[in-house]
Length: 289
Image 1 (cartoon, one colour):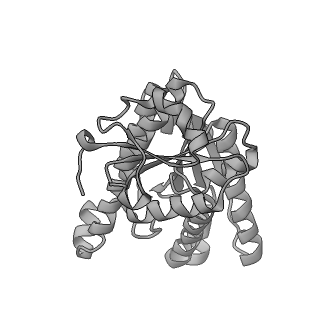
Image 2 (cartoon, helix red, strand yellow):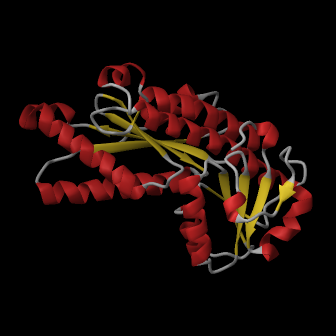
Image 3 (spheres, helix red, strand yellow):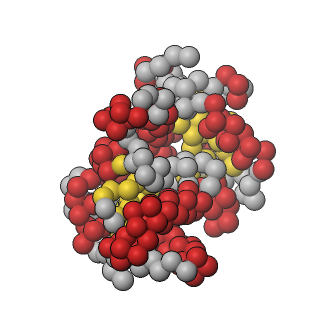
């Protein structure tokens, strides 16, 4: 496999009727040009646009899943104009990025730019898997993973968030951050001990995994706080995600008998957002009951 942006190609797969009109707009976005190749010929350096007709196509969902499992190519689902909210929701659960075929040329090019950034995050995730094969001592020194929860740590989140904020500001794309705080952390530790507290935080991590998309990045950011980076998500969408997570953990709390007081704060990139630290501070300042 080749590597480096100098070899990057823009690959068209899926519904030709959706993608063909976009070719003139996207010519020149990447050095390798716009091509139509077989799925098996997709390279790690490629950005793949998958044309999705209104009503969806189960075969395309399978195709995206297969590409994601064997390649680090950036993938963008392009939905036919007129797709419903359900179509968008289904697409967001299988593709890291989703854009409408009716989007402006600037928005379409921005989606390609985000896909390139997504490839970089994929490479970082692959690096994480390699590091987990090292000794425990080495992992503690250099890992991007919090060993207690299995989530990314604050350092990895902030590095990823810095890139994402810069891209969001440059291309005008939505990006949100949710911060969660366990208000009764001390009580949980006193009542259940360190082992019991770890079990609670593992449940939080499991809920993230079950609720979030593949493109989202969830992390333990210190003592009683977690954070989730939500690409391509506006403030309203982020609030829905936060509420869904709180509802799921509320159900778990009722069933397990473990009282969990979880609050959340949501911040979205705006013209006033300077960097990752600024977005994190804004979300933390909005933590509410």
